[in-house]
Length: 152
Image (cartoon, rainbow, N blue to C red; front, top):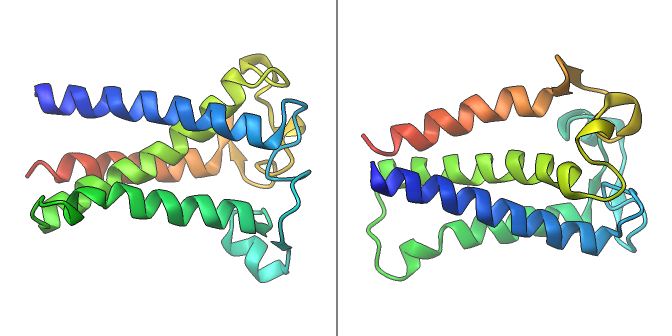
């Protein structure tokens, strides 16, 4: 149980730090989804459909791949890979991104909780349900299931 509590604490802290980094990368003016960054973007309708209504950007693809590699780091320094350990890592990875995304809005001076609304967030707007982006409703349970199943 202590390991699980430590993992959740680490998840919260790492997501908060990364949200802060991302705010400082994208700027505090509220331009999200790499809108003002000098990065490539693909907004072909098929890509947008697959990418939850958003264009795919070089910035986002890069950080997704980087974090996927980083969460697997323990396996490269001696932790034995097992299917259960992989589920735990993938659950952490998924929950990290959901939490990091939400915290980006919470601590961003241009947003905050009161401005966390569909009409103000174009990159989440196409898929919004019950007060939150649909991605949160899909990926949070998936991440929890994977994370918890990693303990069995």
